[in-house]
Picture 1 (cartoon, one colour):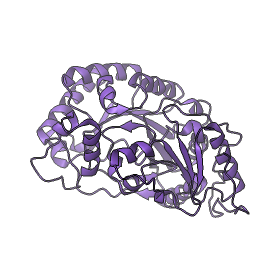
Picture 2 (tube, rainbow, N blue to C red):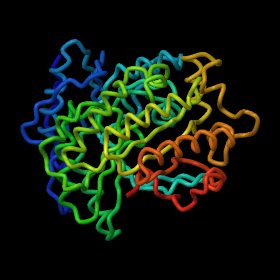
Picture 3 (tube, rainbow, N blue to C red):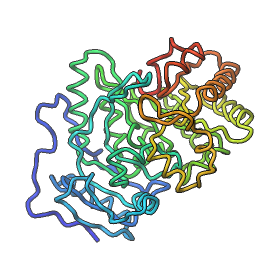
Picture 4 (tube, rainbow, N blue to C red):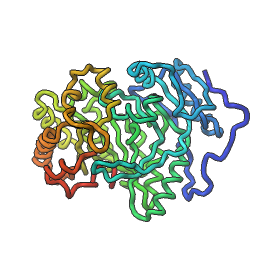
Length: 397
């Protein structure tokens, strides 16, 4: 089914005050079906048909999935799509098979972390959630995902870039804008071609820099565009033994490493995020072998480490999927109340032990690479003598 535009299309998707005249979509881009995503339904929400270019873009996407049901709910905002399923696990799985298209009018935000050592940073959302199905996913407990855990594409990218332009010019210094806090930054790029708009924008900007986090393997769109080193690409990774148990429907670690290697050869700064570290049996040997493979294959500018730091709602979904005896649930510290920031973590002593081993291993392989911790508490930084690295994690320059 081809979506039908409602009457007369409205114009004005690009703010006139933007100093950068960028389109929402790359000219003449031919979308491709990404790996790991085969939606059964495509739901068109508010803003989908605000102009002819959006309509054309959506029609091309829909033609890639002739087997999918296309549903128009043009009166609804993207975060009010109700799949009508009460069971949390069934809702989660249905959401992973649903693509919602619409607009996000407040997509550029400053994070507001309290109770941990996160430096807070600017982030933006041309996508929402992701098609991958990691059993430990912390996004499952965020308000927008809990109600409507669907995969989302937002069609007002130019408005987001205009906002980034205004914010960065006011700050008047190089500033990271992070894509990966509330989504995978690259998983749907074969569909949208957004990287072919974003990377040139950041390449030409005097202050704004893109930091992108992904688990994806398709980097074709990044290979022949100007980036000037102002797009920083980072991959979330875990050893194959961890990935096989907890990272469902994701590219294999070896595939991610190959994507990293290709992007490094194309001149992009590359980072790795080893998170969440999970203490499976024999974890010291498992993580040691994996770090050896990763660091010798890819020139890394920074490695960020992190453990489970999740909300109760997300942990409940993990247990509903894997059972209460799974390694993550068994490792989480339930002997005390939640951390100051409302999250559950491993015991401090266990986190320190794991981090210390990984840091020692990394330093042995490459003494020069920068090492950071993600969403950690001051106690852990102090125990590891890493207070000088506070605020130098993956999400910032």
